[in-house]
Length: 188
Length: 188
Image (cartoon, rainbow over all chains, first blue to last red; front, side, top):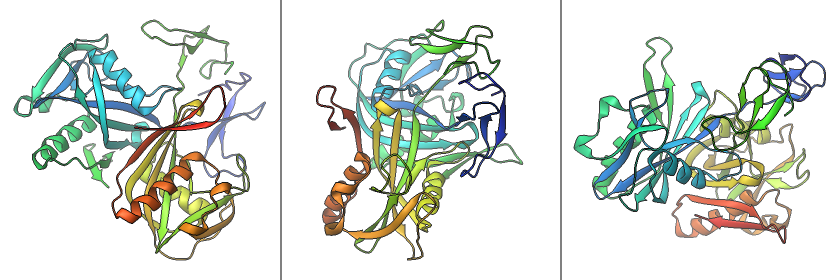
């Protein structure tokens, strides 16, 4: 972030009047460039006793498995975004159930939302960003080849909650321990 | 959005290779400027049979009443953001309960999240962005002086759900009818 996207002049990182944190502000026109977290919208597609996973064909985590999801776009809802990402990555037709989990990942300024979903048919296939798309039962899940902590946590909750046949919403924060660099999941 | 914030040169709105929608891309360095929805984090502070509302001291909707909330910042969680906004706008100490409602507002690229919260004491007061902060019981709510549709919807759900003593999460989309310009709430 070097230049003003309004006038092209140089930016300085200063605290604007009436604010309490540094923003990129244009030296010339004064335009303030706010930066805010992005939303990742995902589904947990269920078919009988199985869940649908995608093998990533892109970085980060190329070759690892994930639930379908991606950046929410301007002009769409969380629900529309989750359906779109599921179509794009897994060419899969799902119907959304409830919002099932929310993961804050503050060190990369992201909020991940997962919707439980019914996979409506078996006409799924790899989209452009997937190497493979496959249904997994609980004992087949490639736990040590999952791409992201929020995906792993959501799957763990799902298989636990399924036994109780109750699906409360789960909220947590994924933190990086500054000393060990290990991932910590803090539940709310 | 006229200039590249990386190199300062001109932007064009084009569909980048491998993408399916227009982005602002730099004519010189090729930097792609993604734009994504922002998250508004809010609380529904409860004290006995009352809820805490703030009278806005800023635009938009100056002078109208709202629940405490504002833009989630980089580096924080949804929960930390909701607590921070409640302190800033109402100088109020709350403890968060569950995530209670999610409103998509796609025509302004926003997602509003409301957490139920217990107001811990009566030491609240107007923050810099509030003209007044006040506890309202159900029959005192200034329904025709509320600032935002998601606030009104969340309050309606709360008073309804309180009678049942059960607080399921509510998700909806706030749309503008292109003909009548009226607000439509579509529940998921």
